[in-house]
Structure formats: structure tokens, C-alpha cells
Image (cartoon, rainbow over all chains, first blue to last red; front, side):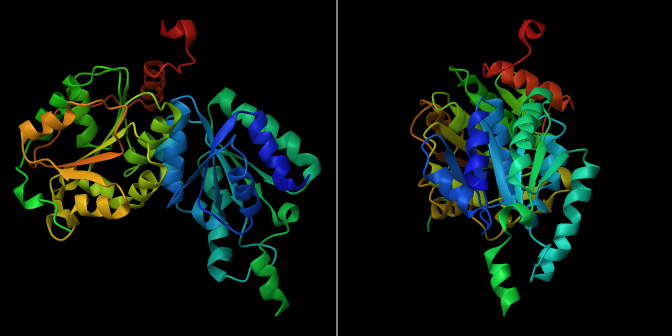
Length: 175
Length: 204
């Protein structure tokens, strides 16, 4: 099993069917897996806050969802988290591919990455950085269950240690 | 793209929201955007299937899309202002792609950010929301000509025929109600109204 198959399996185990996303290279195996599996309902959003809105509506109407995005996309959703997910007590499941670290070539990515964990901490949102497949299953499974039982958002940050990072960044570094 | 915006009569959001609510016969979900839009929905008389936004400007349509996808048998209506929809026009492309047949969008267009001091929006000058929506792929988009036209457009099943966008030119009157500022309560009551509540006996 690859890390992406394992992660999709964990979402399935927890009845998370609606996958909303703005794409990223690192997320590609997840998104390909979602589109290949009729269990999932795939919703490509034009912005990450739109994806947050859609999973919020779906949750309230009885359909569990997750938002997949990259680091820079997370920087667009502080207002949606602060004025929708957190105060309305929505168990928003976020899967964020971590750009801007361990070999990043794009200065914009490296700068915006520094805002991610402070923003999550400021809002009191639980976040876990997934670094290896051994611990990933326990962290993700138990934290999704906690999110739904306590009605609170949770963010899973996909470290390059888990995913191998952005293939485009690796190619640039070799040049 | 001609869309008859110039022919649309200037109407009143408070009155039309009341009219809309009176037309709802099948526990349709109504998601109302920030500010005057949800103040007037609240003023029209609270219903268990109403969701009031107290922030996250621009997300009424995405939230309504999520509700529509989760409960495809229920009619879902998003109420949004012109300033709010301009903040996230991309959601119209997403809605056109997902094609929820049970989603109706109403845009209240007064050409101003009424609540912040009546500053002009782009719809007062160059932007035609119906043209934008059609261009995004929401083909069933039209300007409401007058109150009778609005009423006729609402005499339909809200659980089919969508996605539909109705744009209404309105005056600059403020909303009439004041929604209680308790997001957790709003969410909990909305979920009970949709049959997804987790309060059990607490909500009996």
C-alpha cells in the first residue's frame, strides 16, 4: 500500500465520502484515487474557502467530507475557519500537502508556509504532521473520530518525509 | 450577452424574502449570506431549515451546494448579495460543473455594499451577474422583471430543474431583522431541521 492508498482507506473507514480540493502535485495520487473510486464524491473547487463552504453544508446535511489543498491554499482560508468552521463547530477534515520546506524552490511557497502552523495554533485547531506510514494510520483514524465526536476541525499536514515532496521541486534542485 | 438587466424593476428584499418563504412547502433548506440577506430571512419568520451566516462572506452558494449534494431529494435555496457573490464568482463554475438539480440561487443586487456604507459594487457599473452566471455554465440564469415574475418563477419544484440562478435588482433598504449571534445554536437547529441533528432528547 502506498501512503495515499492508506490515507484514502482511512477516510473511507470513517465514512468521509465528499472530497473537495484545489489540486497540487503532491496530492495527485490522492485525487487520482478518489476519482477512480465510486465511493467518493469528488468536487474540484476554484478556491479553498469554497471547498470549506461545501464540506460545511454537506456535514450539516449528513454527508462527511474533507478538504485537500496545498500550503498556499491554506493561507486563503483563515476567515472561513475563524467565522464558519470553528464558531459553528464543524468537524472540518483538512489534508494539506506541505510545500515551502525541505527543498522548496519557490520563495513565495517558503514564506507562506511559515503562516500555516501559527494560524492553526491561533485558532486552536488541532493539527498533526504526518511523516511516516507507520504512525499515520493511528493518527488519522483516531483524529477523524475525535473531530466528529467533539465537532472540531482537524488538519493533517503531509510532510515531504511522508510523500517525497513535490516532484517539480526535486527536479529543480537537480538542475 | 443580453440579459435584460436594464428591464428589471427595482424591488425590495424584505418583501421578496417573505414571498419566497411563503412559497416553501417541502421543508426546503435556505442558506442566507452574511448581513442584510440573512437578517431579512430571519425577519420573514424562522424556520428549522434556515441557515444564517455570521461571517465567511461569499460562501452561501458553496454551503448550499454542499447541502444540495448531501440531500439530493431536498430543494435547497441560496440567498446571496451582489457584493458577496462578487467575492467568489468561481463557485458558479463549480456549481455548473456539479449540476445539482435541487439548487436555486437568488442574488439580491442593489449595486452597493449596503451594510458598510453603501459603497458601489461592480454590478452598479459594468458587471451583469446573469451574464457572469451563464458564462460560468449556469445556463438557467435570468433577471427577475417584477414581483409577479418572481412569484411565477417560484411556483415550481425546488428539488428539480436546477441549478437555477435568479438575479433581482433591489433598493438600498437595510434588512429588517437581527439574527441571534449564536453560531453553534444556528448549526444545531439547522441540523435538526434537516434530520441530521445529534441532540436526541435534548432537542425534543
